[in-house]
Length: 108
Image 1 (tube, rainbow, N blue to C red):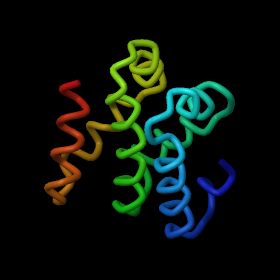
Image 2: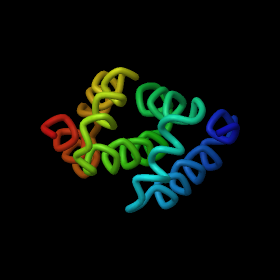
Image 3: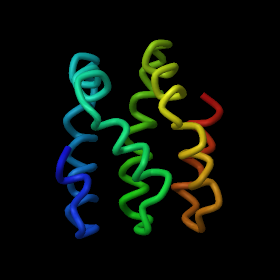
Image 4: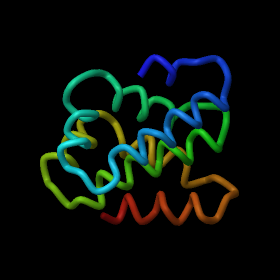
């Protein structure tokens, strides 16, 4: 999680990408990230405010993967942590794929 605060955007992007790959398909791993430390708060903060759109895209992929599980407790935890506002912050992006992913996440 400390790399999510790194001053280089490439390090933040790669860290988010590694987290995305780590949680892929495993509720146990999602739970590790969601409930054991401040990792998700940092991911949602980056999604909402990172100046690099590529970092924000990687964060959106993490949030979207958690929403895709369909588990109510994960979704409610994301909502409680401010993920809706963070997702809305990327809807205005000029990247069509990112906008569609954000809209799909909101729809879910």
